[in-house]
Image (cartoon, rainbow, N blue to C red; front, top):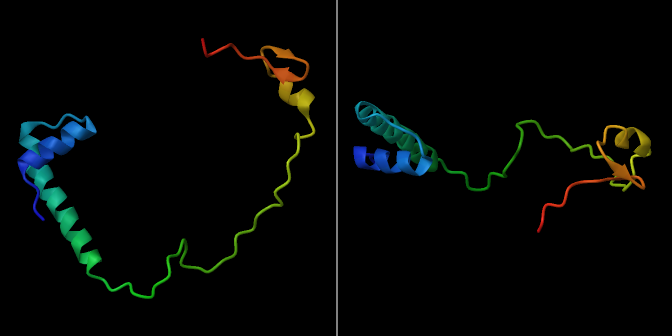
Length: 95
């Protein structure tokens, strides 16, 4: 797939970036090269290859999912500009 100056103009408008007219030919060539590399990757046979997040097989170590209040409400509320009955007071945001 080849990218032309009109496509670069459209992409720049959608991305809301300013691209000088003199840069559009260069960007078109660079984007075309990127798409060629993607097409090469698409040609690789990945049949039977499991998706992975790391090249090293490892098990995620997760803590036990337990709901707590943190055990230090006084310290947490100490930084609050305004508090009432152990809760943060915030301004009303809905009319």
